[in-house]
Amino acid sequence: MNHPQRFTGKVVLVTGAGTGLGAEIAVRAAQEGADVAIHFRSSKAGARRTADRVEAEGRDAFLVQADIVEWAQIARMADEVWGHFGRVDVAINNVGDMASDQMSWREITEEAIDHTLAVDLKGTLLCTHEFGSRMLEQPDGGSIVNVGSTVVVRGSARAPQYAAAKYGVLGITKSYAQAFAPKVRVNTFAPGFMETERMLNREDYKNGRGEKLREMTPMHHIPKPEEVAGTALLLATADAQHITGSYFVADGGYNMIGA
Image 1 (cartoon, helix red, strand yellow):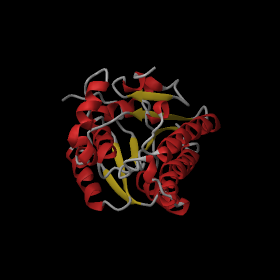
Image 2 (cartoon, helix red, strand yellow; image 1 turned 90 degrees about the vertical axis):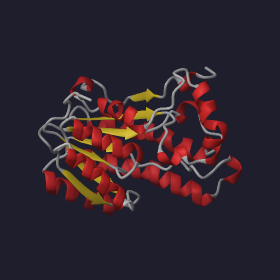
Image 3 (cartoon, one colour; image 1 turned 120 degrees about the horizontal axis):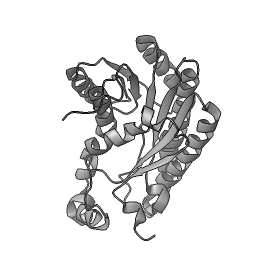
């Protein structure tokens, strides 16, 4: 497939790029001409596989490890990435926790609430703050894309803490979009359900939920992560140069159900 070269000569940093959507965004960025910083927390083997795919596209791949719930680790990660490339043009804050093992609101625990909010909310805020602050010092600024979810439209009876965290991501995006303007743009990309490896292995998805979701989605399709990776990157392109503080949905129309 011939991809548009929207990131030729650019450096793209993707958090949580060892698996799933993060890995596909990293590879797509490379296919479009970017060198890529590949962040991981514990899945070094997955990050290495992503790096191999990036390098197969003829681009530079740089692995960096950090736990994004700790500011010191994020700052150290940024030091390493900026030290290697000299700059970062695009940062995709993809890391998130869907509380996917929780099947009902009745199963919620304080530990689950704390963990989801720490990763999805605190981690996204700290990464946006750290990366954006450094981009402001660059001559050409930069662009940040926070990965949200269409759960903010519908809520989540299954995992209220996940919906709360993703609502918070919108506040982070809008706040830093104002703070960093006009030099650094900040937007939220909101995918719907995706057929990630984790989703495909869930018992409820295998036992009818997947088919039900397809029926409920106007497009009658649940995409694989690689099908929406280019859409996530769209917000960081020159074509989106007048978009900041926005919430961009790509869910096949699922958010319209019940409207």
